[in-house]
Length: 120
Image (cartoon, rainbow, N blue to C red; front, side, top):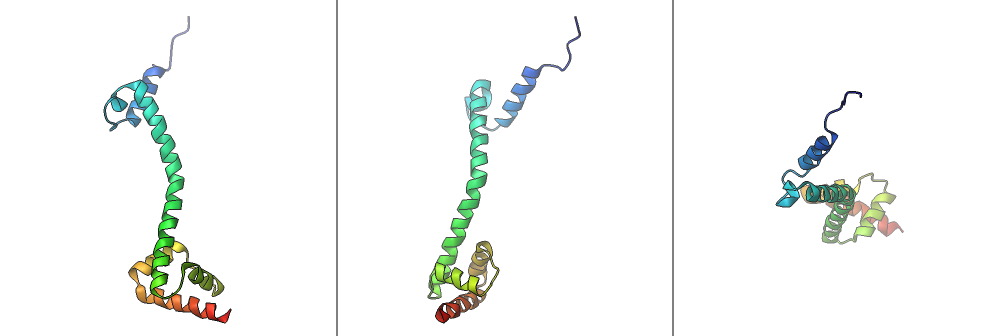
């Protein structure tokens, strides 16, 4: 009979699951069967949320830009449309940062967008 090699696969598998469940409360962190379900759910949610995070941040940037645009007497869509017509290559993340940290620059951008709106 050949010699058994490779160690205990079952123990390695359990150790991996319990390592991933480290920090979970109650039986979710101590019982293998329940920990396995908790880890599967956690991994699925982390996968989904990595995609959701991108959506959430874009929504946040849009809200910030919209609020700043209203302070300068224009709407979000008019601001974005005007900037696109002027070929200003700023994305929403950068516009949001400018709106928060540099109001003077945002005012100039808003005026540029308004001028483009008047031309139409």
